[in-house]
Image (cartoon, rainbow, N blue to C red; front, side, top):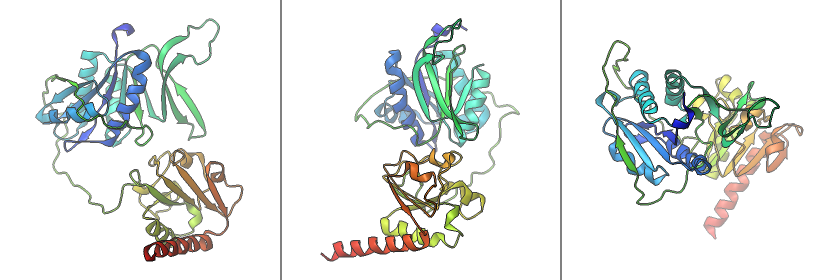
Length: 350
C-alpha cells in the first residue's frame, strides 16, 4: 500500500429519505479542522437514489467536493449495496481519512467497509486530531507525523484511549452524533460534484425490504433539546418522574434519563444520555438523582450549564456540575418548579 497515494478528508454524508442527517454536517465541520494542517480538501460521499440535489447543502457546511453515488438499488439503506458503493469510492479516489457517523446505519456500514478495503476502524470516537504517533517518541521506533489521532472511551468508559492507524489507509473512524460541532452554513456555497457509479448487480446477498414501518413520536429528540431535566436511579420510581416532568414543563424543556433508568424499564432507550445512549449539549442540563458515573458524564459534560441535585454530597456528578444542591430531590424539585412558575406568572402579569 503506497500511503502517499491517499489524500483528502472524506465524510460519509448519511441521508435517509433524501434528507441529510445532522451527523453529516457535524462531521463536515470536524473534517475542515482536520484538513487544514494536511493542506487538503474535504470531500462528502453522498449515497442514495435521486440525491444529487442535496450536494449544495453539503457545500454550505464545508464540503469542497461531493462524490455522488446514485442508483435505484440505493433508495433504502441495505448493507450490501451501500458497502459496495462506499468501498468502491475509497478504492477509486483513495482518501487519507474516512469519517462515518456512529448512527445505527454508520455502525453497520463502517466496519463492513473497513474490512473490504483492508484498513482499521476506531469506533465511537469523541475526539479527532492530527498529530504525531506514537504520541511520545520511543527509542528505536519511527515517530510518524500528520497521523489521525482517534480518541475514544475504553474499558467501559473507565479510561480514554488514543488510537492511530499509521500503516494502512484510509484512517477510518466512526464518531458519535452530538460530539462534533457543525460550522455556520455558508450561504450560496458550491462544491465540485462528481457522479460515480461502480455498478450494482443484485444477488442473493441483497436484503429484500418487504415493508418500512416508521414510528411517530410527539416528543423532542433529546439531542435537539435546549433544556434537559435528566433523572437517574435516585429518582426512586417511574411514577416519581412526574416531578421531573413538571419541572421540564415549567422550563420548556425535555425529560431524559440515565442508563440505570432504562435498564430498570422506567423510560425508553431513546431518552438515555451517556456513553451507550445519546450525547447531548443543551444550554441547561439538570442531573437529578444521578450519581455521575463516567459513562453518563461522557454524554453530557459539554452542556453549557449543569445543575446537579443529589442527596450524596460526595457524588461524582458534583465534580462536573456548575451548580450543585445537596438534599432530597422530592423536596427540592417541587419547590424549584413552584418558584419558576411563580416567576413566570410575575413576568406575565407585569
